[in-house]
Image 1: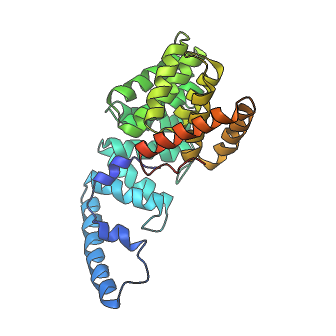
Image 2: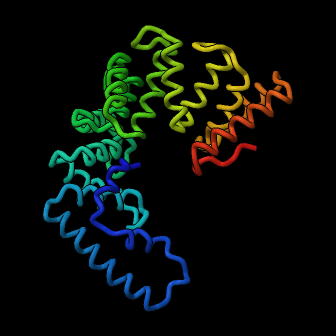
Image 3: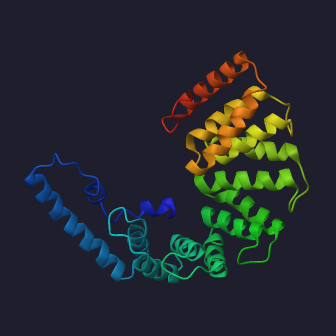
Length: 282
């Protein structure tokens, strides 16, 4: 949920994080040494946060928000994010915006979410720029404005980190495909979807598959469509996989066995080259 850049605020060592997943094989002596080190590190982190270090405050808020190490407590998370945001830390501003957007530890308030996203976005925070664009696209907490959404997506593409940049490419591709806020341009949509798909973004892969299936902005190519559908299913959220499975079934009915085999072969090759994030398509 929280920007991955917060993990760079490593005021707490991997020993503390590892304690949450430590196996039963650790000896009593090992546990004693680890516990002693953890206590020192937690004390240092909390002292830094209470002394006003915004990065420490933001990290402490993240740990409360995720519940991965500390007991999950959205109220405390909001309090620490607010202290970091008050000092102008963009990660803290973005995180506070997320809490307002989803109503975690505070009453859900999309206008307040937009305000905090904007403060982070204006400092070049890529994920905040994407999230602000989404609010403009949907008209949540702000007046619906597709052109303004496109502007923030473009900013995220220019200066954002990888997660924000890839998401921005997908959303900008959708705007071009639908002609929302920009002149409809299927060629541009395909290029944005290709950029996101190449980075392993499942929504980009799914949308690229649809373009290949329908021959929009590119030559119709069922093998490529089937390949990208397979790949999108490997990392897509669980709730999206039924849609992908249905699209694969429908497309497969119009393809020969040889064409499907070729698509699976290309998907396996792409997944192997991309890395271990992908399970090999069947």
